[in-house]
Length: 471
Image (cartoon, rainbow, N blue to C red; front, side, top):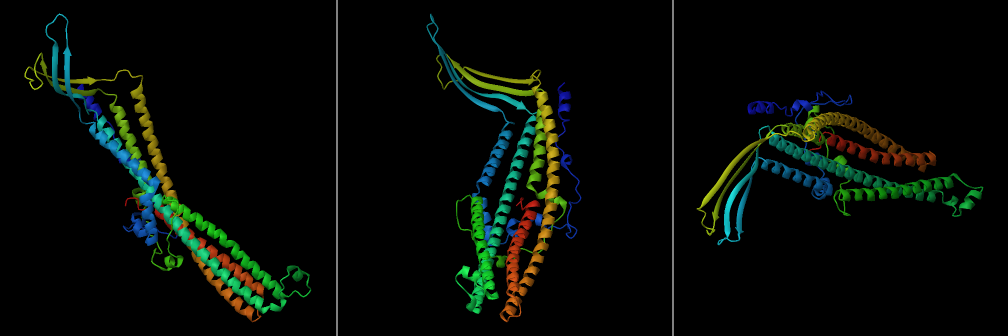
């Protein structure tokens, strides 16, 4: 009977990696981007190498050390590690040291009853016949690896969020600088108009509208003032956004306030902060490096191991018990145990017979749960592929938008410069100057937004491919 049970117990189907394997030859990508197979892909690039801005590196290091959410996930990993250590201890017996003294006085007996002794007892040492303890150990280890993957996912998200906010802040600084420069230009242009049309200026606005001698110069001055006020009205909005973004970064650093040191946009654009192209890699890198995919697969391993534990619980449990002790009675002293030595050894098989269907239901629940985890893993992989595909398209389109806006800005800057020169000589109308000026301001703001979006897409793509999770 025992040999038959052993053969049945050894026939359990443990987790096979092919269960969670999905054949993905290629994720959808824009036609102009080619997925290449090489070792130096962005997916396995260290975040310290991907983000070479020293100010950003310092912020990320500070966030990794201080962020409360990341610290909480690290504690969760440590808890899972303790469960793994505890599961290893299940293979060893419980050993108790017993020290006792028993004394009683019986009536009509001249001497009291007195015994004492010391002994060691091994209690409930379960022999792992069917792999129950091994399955529990494997499940706890898979749970540990799952928590580590979750922690890496939190780390990747934290790094990406800090980087995105950092480059947003750099872009906002550039927008604020552009507004200040435009305000300065508008003030100079307005002063120039007021000097040229000095004879037509009038401090009484009602008098201007009521006068029959209103000139083109008066209208030009008012239009120039309107453009100046428009630029000044944009500045407070940018200042507010900078303030809010700085607070968001400080929150990721788990502090209420602090100075955010950052580089200028010109330093980043014309330096060597980032290369102009990204090597994407092959879809297998997606499986290798994404923390959510790794966590989903470890969840399958955990459930399959617990399913084996549930199966093993249906079979007899072999336990060993042993005891060895000394006993001294009557008037013997504590240091003399020569009177008697007691020892025993017990081995027994305990077969569950009726537990209200608890073990059978647990086995069925674990089977259903393992199937759920496989489906969740498949969906996680497919969602990851879509995320990478969207990031690739976003990277491609935002790069094209930035290039087009850069060329538009160059053309508008030339048009604005030419119109100013012609207006001074009276060869063009002031309306042309104002139109070119307004378009130039808006395009410069759009260019800063496009650059922020472009950097954000690079960060999103890096995160979608794993974000340096294994490092």
